[in-house]
Length: 214
Image: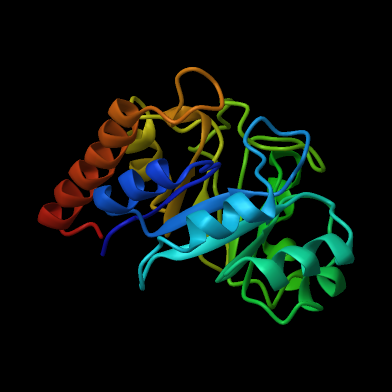
């Protein structure tokens, strides 16, 4: 067993290639215009074009219109959609794409109910934002609280090279999702932090596998 890794908010082909070389499982492309990490479809298409097989291209939307989502899906090669706002199950289902649904920190108490409501979601992403607000704030939530779901859990919110090992040990998620934690300055990916983050994920996974806890 190993923890899957998604580097989100990728804005350049170079950053995507660095992430791929480090062994990420997914590249996140942000289509929420107010975000410092937002990119246009043409840039996203260029990035998606360098992503090899077995690395997922994830398009992130936050309360976008159906037309906006469809426009991106028609112009960019996308494998998985991530809905990060207050989208309803019907809205998420209509595109016929595998999708991840984010769960904001103020809704974690209803995680089981959330999994039932979004029963077609492939995974739930737990973030530290409040519902309807973007992630990437760098704030973490209490990883030690009970997080039980019938669906795979992807952990996000305030993760960085200094705390990702502790977060994985506490939650044992299917995957982790990082954006601001590998940036310096904000909005710009930092190669050193990208390397450190992956090194820490691999380290804690190797320790867990040797101990037989994963």
